Length: 181
Image (cartoon, rainbow, N blue to C red; front, side, top):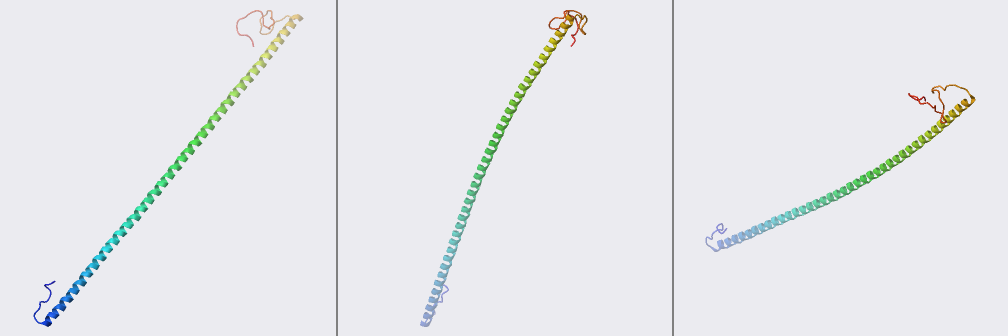
């Protein structure tokens, strides 16, 4: 810059002028330096503001991500608890149904057993009744044969070989073949 400065050519007027030019140039340089300082400060301020803004945005984004992560964790926990309770309810319902089925099976077994005993009792009753009727009929037959023999009516009984009839209503002779019914 000193090179650009006009050189004194002699004389007082020129020296004053050259000093005024130098003062103007110094003033201009000072203003330029101040403008550069202001520009540098403004650039630093903008840079700092941009950094602050980026940091604030990063913090906001980080907080949002943390909130999202926490919300997802809470939802997963809720779903897990919900599924657990659904599984427990299903198991409880299944166990209850199994218990009811066991009770039904036992009731049906008991009913079947009771029916079996009732049927056996009915069969036994019928058997006893039939045996009693058969015994009565045999006694009646024996009584009628004895009466016939006492009355003196000779003859053969159909289906029986001739012979003496005992008290049970059977003929005295044994014979081969099937017995008449």
